[in-house]
Length: 496
Image (cartoon, rainbow, N blue to C red; front, side):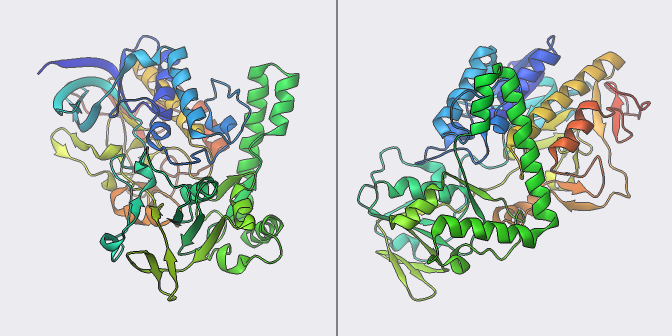
């Protein structure tokens, strides 16, 4: 088996992977890199998910790359437009030439003797093993399993005579015209599916165990449109981006500090959207505070319009069992359906589920701690790109890629071969994600931890991360540096 060597290997050709490649080309132009993509196409999430109405739940002025202005009309964009944007970015900067498709990474193995990662991937339908080596590894494979979504074991599901579908594997030929549809769930996927399917279905019911906070926003940013008319494209984009970052940050802090006040504001917003007769207390009154779970965005109130017009409805109840004709609820009510969509979430995973070894020792990500949200304790030369939960994914992805380039350039300048974050014994462990969501709780035992102080704590604050990661010290006392075959040491506190 031949082994190909690169300075850097990027895993994943989605939004994060293309961004990482751009930063590497710009800031580390002498480095040879390859992108290993498990699927047959570029785009990651935006190529995988094909369900009706799929769109961003963040505005494209912050979900878009900092270096490539979003120039389309809608701030909340449909999935195909986002996919075109990612593909166009890859073509524009020649990044698409570095992608190796159908390379599903299964194993990472670090050797301290030569300060090198060996990456194994299964290639093509035959799953032939291919091997690569690199000095630095950037994992951009996302945070969930691509091969399967999460579906609970519903009693009697095998008796249902209609179709049961998970949004992660949407059939291309599905015809739901005139059909009765039940969408199980109340998260971002469900609130997207319901109004989209209601346009053709006989009726769509959103079945939820508990309510979610849902906010309507216009899909066109009028301030952005005005700035684009008056200013150069790049300047208008940056001004809009900072406006939206500031608004997102302020709203999140307001939710955290004054949850009762925000709850009242959201209730007033819902009443205006749904009218005086809708039962908000039952269907849109979550038991948790705003931003304990991620808020859902609906563009132009499309979900609320479908509910007002009677094309869709909401039922808040628990499932007792599936039947031949639909779903029997614990209240005794039965929901008849021709199609049931299980919008019940994702299966979270670290490093795409690949096996991780350091000097022959198996490493479990759950036994590590995240450094600045981008590296793992005691794991050399490995960065993983994970976005924000309270803001656009790409904001953190861009910062992570920039910081990795700083690290690489610092090591080259100082003559080091590897860097390893080392956590001190007095740092207390905390859960990786500060969200009270079911999909997070299901995966807690398999996710890395965060610490109770910097640089181990995830602050979920773009402005703070921007200062720390773009201008902070690289040799900060927690990061150690070394040469191949030699132990790592701390170096003098200095900037890259």
